Length: 184
Image (cartoon, rainbow, N blue to C red; front, side):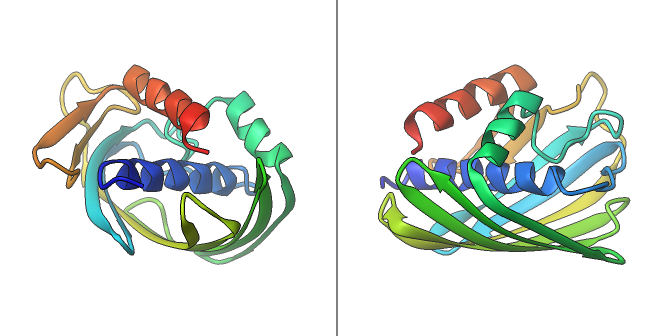
């Protein structure tokens, strides 16, 4: 996997993890406003994004449609969720093409001001040369969204090549379609 594609793959994997997390029973919503989300994964540079969230629309899946969430769930033979206080543990087994992904995810925090997700996924056989992925995401509420920002709008930094990338909700949908089409 090229240096540029690996961070995009990790971002796509994180979206899948959030989709399964969002489907967990009665998950609380993130507080409306601007959130800073930091993602790190072994073998990939860390990424930071600021994302505008509307609590009424928040599904923790970055604008994934209900159909996309259902499609992910159909591929999972196991999706066990246990919740205790501010901690949710999700154990899953999902099949994507010929690859079985076995995941263990722990999400903690109050989602009004901060949260952390620690997720380990094993791939059998390895996917894109990866036998295992460990992704850590942390989010913290920064305050109100910037004037004119809509739900799902984000600014990303830490991508290869440097600089900052502004991504609107429509562009994110296109990236997810590309990841679904070419990311397997």
